[in-house]
Every structure is written in structure tokens, then in C-alpha cells.
Image 1 (spheres, helix red, strand yellow):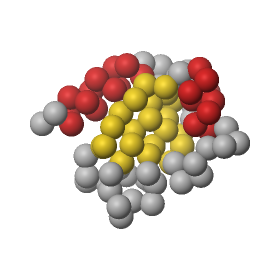
Image 2: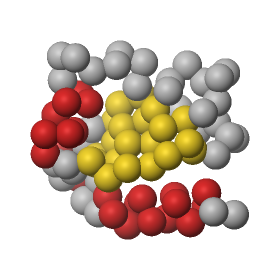
Image 3: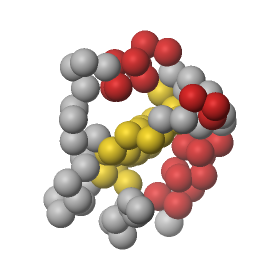
Image 4: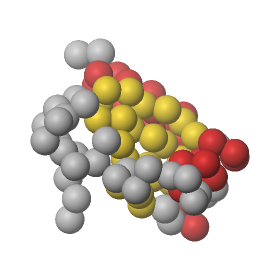
Length: 79
């Protein structure tokens, strides 16, 4: 089970279309933690991490409502 580090995300971005294909395609950074579920939609969320001890510089996952996820994560970052 992967768990996000206790450090806050460095940035959050909703990704769609060409951008998500770029992030998961042949030129992708192999260190990014990826969780793609075909039933949850073609769009996703990229969470950039600033934790030097985390081997993953970012997490990429699909979501039916990426804007809602971005809003929720961004709200926690403003605290």
C-alpha cells in the first residue's frame, strides 16, 4: 500500500487529454507513482511532491472529477 508522505504536496494539477498521455507515455518520468483506472475516467490529477526522502517526485492518478480533487488538495495546502 502506497501512502503519501507527511510533507504537503508541492503542487496539484488537473490533467486531461494530451497532458495525461504525455505523463504516462514513452517519455514519462519512470519515478512517478501511477495509478490509472480505466473505469474512473480518462482525466487525472498530478500531485507534485517536495519530499526529498520520497522516491516518487509526483503521483499521477485518474479521477472522474479531477477539478474537485485539485480543489480539495489545494484547500489542505493553504492551511
